[in-house]
Image (cartoon, rainbow, N blue to C red):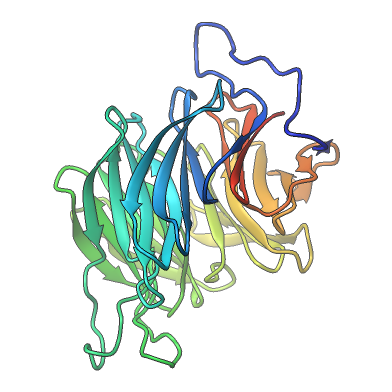
Length: 350
């Protein structure tokens, strides 16, 4: 396993020639606010980092992956008690989607759409209302994760059930469908559960998945309104991260207990379960381009490489020596990690 002892690793090439996506230059990029989530453009030249603090507002920082310079600071909200969440880039790189919110009872209630050509916000859209007892006192559910469809036309957002004051969250977790053309939510499908976790879409298919405390819900998205097909017990979890294999045959999950599951998407059944870091939270989950590896952040301190065939950690692969890591992206070159850690973005060659 690669051990980080300084500002970054050395000796990696900055590009792979004139063809294909560029490789990030290993380094530590200092940011002004705490970093939450990161996504990388399809050409590998820009990384997009959601940053925020209780007093500094919420922003999307645009980072040049070659120089490490922050080339833009896109303000989402300049208020206090601001929260920032997950970031996703459209397949063509033209847009970035960011979850954010403000206030204790409105955490991650907003979806911002950023135009990458101009680094400007073109839409800020609040989550649609949901059935709520005592609407004057009950808030809409918190947004937890998002994923963009293959063609970039839709964004799927996970939402928890409504929250009464000083009481547990109620049933009513949902998956929301956002139209990239209309810049508006066009559908909301209630799924079993109160708490919402990760959300994923199937490559090459028309399916979406959401993890909740009741399991893993599978939705058919081939029509204008997604249709709930089934919910699998033995998978899911409100702190679960999801990722589909590049060939669309499997869905992977890791969770806050250091455990994981593999779902066979041909049969919509749990194929196997595994544990790689017992009792240690696993955050973020991404497959390698060839599907042979899964990458995840373990307890905010290291990046693990998991063999997708054996569901075991691969000795000598991954990155150790991280501190305060929160989320992971893999560059389109397939050989660069981007890790948010504290008020930094770590760019790591592997």
